[in-house]
Length: 326
Image: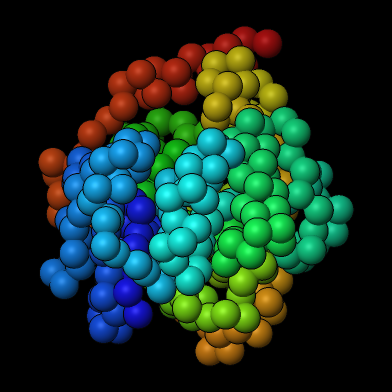
């Protein structure tokens, strides 16, 4: 297969790029070339900004693809542009959505692909819903060969699960409080990017997936307390946890607070029967205990990546101080 990845060097997409190349697919990666992740040998790199439609048409002139995957579309304007660019250039367009689109509060667990799409309190999730509706309308009305994929909380060795950078580990190692929303008992699913890739690759070029949506997650369910303790255990420290209501965080960091309030506060438990109906062998095999070990070891062996976000670090101190003063 000849595949075009728009993006292709992010946390999730990098693992998918690597696996596709390893399976012998003809992979093109189109991005601005600014990511620290380097595409694997064997991937063909095209440098360009997808928002520069004229330039992209020039770069892609003469090409057609079995599959086009956009990893970095976030608004309806993005997918409208993609429809105009790729409607006659591909046999399958995959829009990478998000499991955050599912109705909050969750009406029933486990979450299936039939769970309603409704998340009015978080602009990111609502924008993804708008994208999905547009893409599916083009599929239904104009036979645009679209498939939707909804990753949930996917990570790799470079990403800590609570705030995605080294600052969390720094605070753990120095005995400073780390923030868990509410009381830390809500349940959640973390999916290693390599596991996601093994499910995702089975959708590529599969005509049975046109007009369908799939989430791809682990089946391991953990509380946020367990997630924090597993990470701390691998760092050989006892976690100092501060419990803060999600609503309280919004006043200090609206984006993070809404993420907690309209996503991570709610149970993230998924039924993966639909992806297994297409990829019967799919099963996430990397537990978070192994993933946490990878994260700690990666940062320990990459001191240049041990960057503390001083603004975020100070904000956490302020949140704890203000909450304790109430």
